Image (cartoon, rainbow, N blue to C red):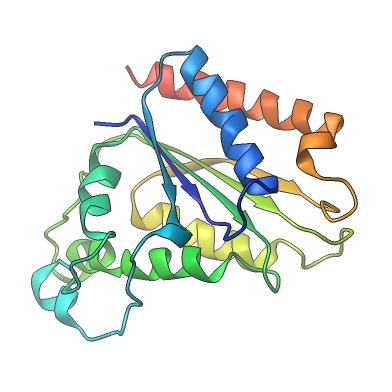
Amino acid sequence: MSEVLIINGSPRKNKNCSHIVKSIIESLDENKITYKVFDIYDMDIEYCTACGFCEKTGFCKFKDDMTPMYDMFDKAKGAIVVSPVHFDCISAKVKTLVDRTQAIYASKYILKKPSIDRNKKRVGMYIAVGGSDPYPSQFKGGQIVMDFFFKSINTKLSYNHYINSSDKLAFIENEIEKVHLEKKIENYVKDIKELG
């Protein structure tokens, strides 16, 4: 099983989020940490319809590319979400994935029969990429949703990293941001290793 799950939440190929994911992969490879990358815009993930099926069973009724991810979230040591900022929030596909973790939430809080090991320690990281210059609410919506997401998958969100003005200066050309992110990834890797 992969130790770290990396969710690339951008619909754009070979742009900022993709380059960030490549930076993460390089660090994980150097440290011999196994991982799996999910380019979720290439995946078939149905919208949550609030049908109530998971509240009765603890599982989602839809069988699609999200289905194996439930077990992966349980077995992994950590998860990293990389998303562009869309209207002060995460991308629509990331929100779709987040909504589908309602099945995990229902198993824990409604049925009291967790489908995920609640005692296992896992490490989370959220990286948000905003195209515009900074403004007060730029990352607030995404952060609120990510806080809930990582709680849902029983993963401690230890690292948040915000990048702005990427329309003016792409991540791949932004030496300052690359250094800042590299330091956080180093700390993340250290935390993953400490889990044993």
